[in-house]
Length: 123
Image 1: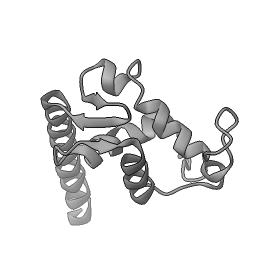
Image 2: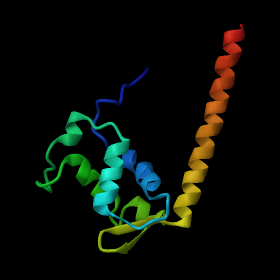
Image 3: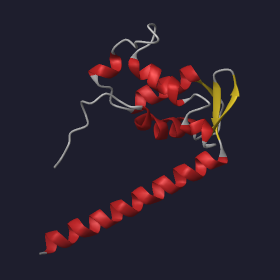
Image 4: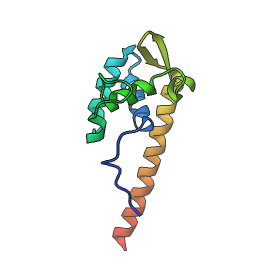
């Protein structure tokens, strides 16, 4: 069964890898800069644009991104990013290693899928 996720609200797990990619160049970036970068890299749903309940001056997607940057959340907790100052973050070597591993896995899956699809077209 195929589930179309394009219209579901974005969740924290959806933005974590995008945050790492936004920080990949090693520069220290502010929460606002990271938020703008993530917003530019994902497809926002109507639900993402709604006003956040707990932060009425932000949209839900802004709240999700800010939550993902909290020190108690996975990115900081697992050492993938570090907080360098109030509202300032940078990627760590652990974050770079995570991205490299993730990309290698995606490449491997892509090659496997291409091989499967290629062999089917020859049948």
